[in-house]
Image 1 (cartoon, rainbow, N blue to C red):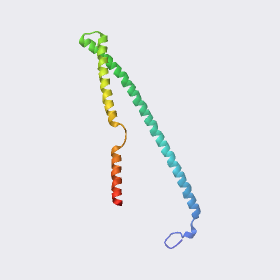
Image 2 (image 1 turned 120 degrees about the vertical axis):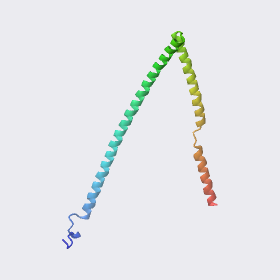
Image 3 (image 1 turned 90 degrees about the horizontal axis):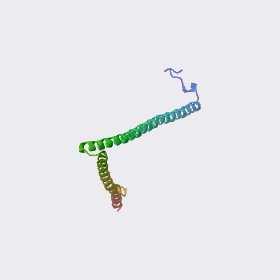
Image 4 (image 1 turned 30 degrees about the vertical axis):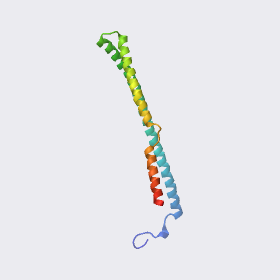
Length: 139
Protein backbone atom coordinates (compact mmCIF):
# COMPACT_ATOMS: atom_id res chain seq x y z
CA UNK A 1 0.00 0.00 0.00
CA UNK A 2 1.25 3.47 -0.75
CA UNK A 3 1.48 6.42 1.63
CA UNK A 4 -1.92 7.82 0.65
CA UNK A 5 -3.77 4.52 1.28
CA UNK A 6 -4.36 3.62 -2.37
CA UNK A 7 -3.35 0.18 -3.61
CA UNK A 8 -0.82 0.45 -6.40
CA UNK A 9 -1.97 -0.77 -9.84
CA UNK A 10 0.43 -3.68 -9.80
CA UNK A 11 -1.59 -5.41 -7.09
CA UNK A 12 -5.00 -5.33 -8.84
CA UNK A 13 -7.17 -8.29 -7.97
CA UNK A 14 -8.41 -8.79 -11.56
CA UNK A 15 -6.67 -8.42 -14.86
CA UNK A 16 -7.94 -5.91 -17.43
CA UNK A 17 -9.14 -8.73 -19.72
CA UNK A 18 -11.29 -10.18 -16.95
CA UNK A 19 -12.79 -6.78 -16.16
CA UNK A 20 -13.64 -6.15 -19.83
CA UNK A 21 -15.14 -9.64 -20.08
CA UNK A 22 -17.27 -9.05 -16.96
CA UNK A 23 -18.46 -5.66 -18.22
CA UNK A 24 -19.32 -7.14 -21.62
CA UNK A 25 -21.28 -10.05 -20.18
CA UNK A 26 -23.13 -7.83 -17.70
CA UNK A 27 -23.92 -5.31 -20.43
CA UNK A 28 -25.30 -8.10 -22.63
CA UNK A 29 -27.41 -9.38 -19.73
CA UNK A 30 -28.66 -5.85 -19.02
CA UNK A 31 -29.65 -5.32 -22.66
CA UNK A 32 -31.43 -8.68 -22.77
CA UNK A 33 -33.35 -7.85 -19.59
CA UNK A 34 -34.29 -4.42 -20.95
CA UNK A 35 -35.61 -6.05 -24.14
CA UNK A 36 -37.60 -8.58 -22.10
CA UNK A 37 -39.04 -5.75 -19.99
CA UNK A 38 -39.98 -3.79 -23.12
CA UNK A 39 -41.68 -6.87 -24.61
CA UNK A 40 -43.64 -7.47 -21.42
CA UNK A 41 -44.67 -3.82 -21.21
CA UNK A 42 -45.81 -3.72 -24.84
CA UNK A 43 -47.69 -6.99 -24.39
CA UNK A 44 -49.60 -5.60 -21.40
CA UNK A 45 -50.42 -2.37 -23.23
CA UNK A 46 -51.57 -4.19 -26.39
CA UNK A 47 -53.77 -6.42 -24.24
CA UNK A 48 -55.35 -3.35 -22.64
CA UNK A 49 -55.89 -1.71 -26.04
CA UNK A 50 -57.58 -4.84 -27.39
CA UNK A 51 -59.84 -5.02 -24.32
CA UNK A 52 -60.71 -1.35 -24.84
CA UNK A 53 -61.56 -1.95 -28.49
CA UNK A 54 -63.79 -4.88 -27.52
CA UNK A 55 -65.59 -2.70 -24.97
CA UNK A 56 -66.09 0.07 -27.56
CA UNK A 57 -67.43 -2.47 -30.05
CA UNK A 58 -69.89 -3.77 -27.45
CA UNK A 59 -70.92 -0.20 -26.64
CA UNK A 60 -71.51 0.49 -30.34
CA UNK A 61 -73.61 -2.64 -30.71
CA UNK A 62 -75.70 -1.78 -27.65
CA UNK A 63 -76.11 1.79 -28.94
CA UNK A 64 -77.45 0.36 -32.21
CA UNK A 65 -79.94 -1.76 -30.31
CA UNK A 66 -80.92 1.27 -28.25
CA UNK A 67 -81.46 3.26 -31.45
CA UNK A 68 -83.87 0.60 -32.71
CA UNK A 69 -85.93 0.95 -29.55
CA UNK A 70 -85.83 4.75 -29.84
CA UNK A 71 -87.28 4.49 -33.34
CA UNK A 72 -89.97 2.08 -32.16
CA UNK A 73 -90.87 4.50 -29.41
CA UNK A 74 -90.92 7.39 -31.88
CA UNK A 75 -93.19 5.44 -34.21
CA UNK A 76 -95.66 4.61 -31.44
CA UNK A 77 -95.44 8.23 -30.29
CA UNK A 78 -96.36 9.55 -33.76
CA UNK A 79 -99.28 7.12 -33.88
CA UNK A 80 -100.50 8.23 -30.45
CA UNK A 81 -99.92 11.98 -30.89
CA UNK A 82 -101.57 12.13 -34.30
CA UNK A 83 -104.34 9.66 -33.42
CA UNK A 84 -103.56 7.41 -36.38
CA UNK A 85 -102.91 3.72 -36.76
CA UNK A 86 -99.55 2.30 -35.66
CA UNK A 87 -98.37 1.56 -39.21
CA UNK A 88 -98.77 5.25 -40.09
CA UNK A 89 -96.47 6.15 -37.18
CA UNK A 90 -93.93 3.68 -38.52
CA UNK A 91 -94.34 5.18 -41.99
CA UNK A 92 -93.65 8.69 -40.65
CA UNK A 93 -90.55 7.42 -38.85
CA UNK A 94 -89.40 5.64 -42.01
CA UNK A 95 -89.80 8.80 -44.11
CA UNK A 96 -87.93 10.81 -41.46
CA UNK A 97 -85.08 8.26 -41.51
CA UNK A 98 -85.05 8.31 -45.32
CA UNK A 99 -84.68 12.11 -45.33
CA UNK A 100 -81.88 11.99 -42.74
CA UNK A 101 -80.13 9.24 -44.71
CA UNK A 102 -80.34 11.25 -47.91
CA UNK A 103 -78.98 14.38 -46.23
CA UNK A 104 -76.11 12.42 -44.69
CA UNK A 105 -75.30 10.84 -48.05
CA UNK A 106 -75.27 14.23 -49.81
CA UNK A 107 -73.06 15.79 -47.16
CA UNK A 108 -70.76 12.75 -47.26
CA UNK A 109 -70.55 12.92 -51.05
CA UNK A 110 -69.68 16.61 -50.92
CA UNK A 111 -66.95 15.98 -48.33
CA UNK A 112 -65.64 13.04 -50.36
CA UNK A 113 -65.38 15.14 -53.51
CA UNK A 114 -63.52 17.86 -51.60
CA UNK A 115 -60.99 15.29 -50.40
CA UNK A 116 -60.27 13.55 -53.69
CA UNK A 117 -57.76 12.95 -55.07
CA UNK A 118 -55.86 12.62 -51.79
CA UNK A 119 -52.74 14.49 -52.85
CA UNK A 120 -50.82 16.73 -50.47
CA UNK A 121 -51.19 19.90 -52.53
CA UNK A 122 -49.72 22.24 -49.88
CA UNK A 123 -46.69 20.02 -49.36
CA UNK A 124 -46.11 19.80 -53.13
CA UNK A 125 -46.34 23.58 -53.47
CA UNK A 126 -43.90 24.11 -50.59
CA UNK A 127 -41.46 21.59 -52.10
CA UNK A 128 -41.62 23.39 -55.43
CA UNK A 129 -40.99 26.74 -53.71
CA UNK A 130 -38.03 25.26 -51.82
CA UNK A 131 -36.64 23.78 -55.02
CA UNK A 132 -36.98 27.15 -56.74
CA UNK A 133 -35.14 28.90 -53.88
CA UNK A 134 -32.27 26.39 -54.06
CA UNK A 135 -32.04 26.77 -57.84
CA UNK A 136 -31.92 30.55 -57.48
CA UNK A 137 -29.21 30.25 -54.81
CA UNK A 138 -27.05 28.14 -57.16
CA UNK A 139 -27.27 30.75 -59.93
